[in-house]
Structure formats: C-alpha cells, structure tokens
Length: 301
Length: 134
Image (tube, rainbow over all chains, first blue to last red; front, side, top):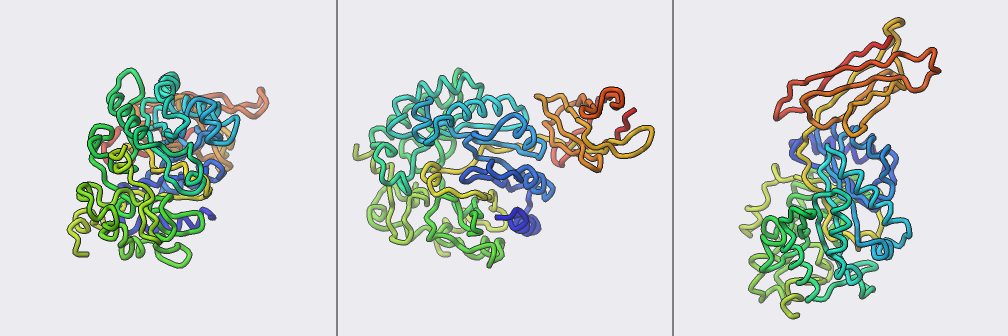
C-alpha cells in the first residue's frame, strides 16, 4: 500500500477524532521491510497521532532504531519465541534468534521507548519458560508478554504449535508466579482470551476483547477490520471504496453486539457473561464456529 | 443495538483508540500473532527542530550531524539545512552540531549548545533552533 493512501485515511480520522488519544500500531508481516516507515511515522506525529511498532527485530539495527526514534516512535514490541533452537524453528530462519536478541538489547537501552517482548508459547517452548526468562533478564528488557497460537493458517495443521489444556494451565500458573517479579522481566498474559480463575492474576485487568471497539485496522490491501488476525469474512469495508470513519461509525456491528457468539457450547456456558464469546480472533465467523475455547480446554484437562 | 453491552462499550466518538496499519502482509505470520499491540506510549517526548546555516555566508548547511546526547541519538540536516527529531523529555539537552563530511581543513567548527526547555504536561513541546556554524 502506498503510504499516501494510508496517510489520507489517518488525516480523515484526525479531523473526526482526537488524534492524541489514538496510537497507530505498525505491524505485519514485518513492518521494517518498508524503507519509508520513519517518514510515515513522522507524518503521523505531525497529524497528532502517536505510533508504535510490532517487529521480529530482524532488521532493527542501531541506525534504523535511531531513525525511527527521531521520527517519534514511542513504543515497540519484539517477538522472541524461545532459546535459539526453538525460536529459529518457529521463525524458519537460522539467524532469527541472534538478530532478535540484538534488537531487544537495543530497545532495552532506548530511554524514549516503552518496550516489551512477546513470546508465542507452543509445545516446543512451554518447558523452557524459565530459560527464556533468564535470557530476557540478560538483555535488560523489563516487560514480557506471553500468548498462544490461534489455530489458523500453518498453525491449524502442526500439532507442535498448540498447547494442551494442561499446558495452558501451566503457562498461566507460570505467569501468575512471575507477574510482579522484581528480579526478572514482569510477565503478563496477552489479551487473547478469557482465562477463568487467572483473570486479574496473570494479566492486569479483566478480559475484554477490544476488537472493533477500541481497535480498527487497515490491512495491506486496504481492507478495514479490527485486529489483523481476525477472520477475513469480518472485513467491514475497504479504504479504496469506503470512508474509514464512516465504516467505523456505522458498521462493525458483529464486534459491538456479540449476541451471535452465544451459540453451540457458548450458549449454555456459565462463563459466557464474563467472556462474551471470548476473543473474536478465535471465531470462524462464516460458519459461526469457535475454533478454540481455552477456558473449556483447561477445564476439561 | 438492544444489547446493553453495546452501549457500555461503544461510545463511537471517543473509543477509536488504536488504528493498526498493516503494510506488509504475511499469511504465515497471522498464525503467530494471537494479539497484536504494543505497550502504551506515554508520549514523553519533545520535538527539537531547526536550521543550520553558515555564520559567514548565511547559506544553509546540509549533512550537519546533530547529536542530542541521549543514547547516541543523532540526526543529519537535510538539503535545506533543516533537522527535526523527537527526543525523550529531559530537563536539558546537550546538543552538538558537527560537520562530519567535508575535508578537515574546510570543515565547520563543531558547536555545543545546552537548551533547557520549559516543559508542559499536556501539549507537545517544540524547540525551534537557529544554529550558525563558523
């Protein structure tokens, strides 16, 4: 997508909403593949927005980070999915771990940035969480967010990606124990799903899926949706045909009224009033089918 | 629309908090990211910008390195002699302007400057400098 098309949309948004209350998160794919990222960031700041970045860190060397901070970058998230072997296995790149660690060290030293590391927990690294914790402590990073894989795309077919209910429970226990650690980076669970008795313990605040309520996205082809990992049948429009602000104000009904999720197992579940159908990214909207309910999985195990 | 949650969570003019810009899309990476997002940026920065000119000829000076003394942060002036950088909010900045490119005998002398901005809580502080190098 040419940057001017994206910036045209943000310009419209800035006229209708207060840009100071909005953060533009650049994600992907890998946003650092774009050479015009700093230029885009500078223009977003000129429009009044804040901006941040989710990256695998592969292309984040000192000069690039300097350029991004100069352009008003305020927050950054870097992915690290384990020690070298496990990280490189998941990323399918033998050099990925080394570069990610260098990038984490770099952002940990950058006083201007609020930074964290995200770890995608899977069968290969669930037993290595204390080791990852040690590695992160050595880098100087202070915040660590853990999440699991949604069973879509490649992850739907590979068993090693998905945790059992018992492992999911084990993950949440680990986070709870390290939630307020002063010796290690502070661990927290992502906003991915309702976690029953671990609510407010493994994560600050109670579960609430913000997709389409606080979060809108523009995808590479111009599609307008909520979080970028949500089922494509929930796309609400396209910036090349629609006014983003009009779509935001007048569509997004499936995100804002989630009664449609009260079907099948969710219809009779006594936790529904807390989770309201869980995170939208767990749903196959077209077939009105939840891909996975981690709470049920934990309970069954 | 009848669901009370709809009203509780959706105040449409106020709640557009985050816009995700996805420029480079990879189907595979969708599987890896369960929840996108970054930590909150508290916006604790100031804009330092300005123009660097020659004290003798008054012409603009491109390629001048501006160091701000924070974790090695620096920028270079553009073809119009202008520079702009967002910097961590501090009580004072030790700025150094140096000319890294031209041969030593024709190089402009480096200049150090200390600025102490009056920082406001709410609005973005902009420091606008006009620097002349000898």
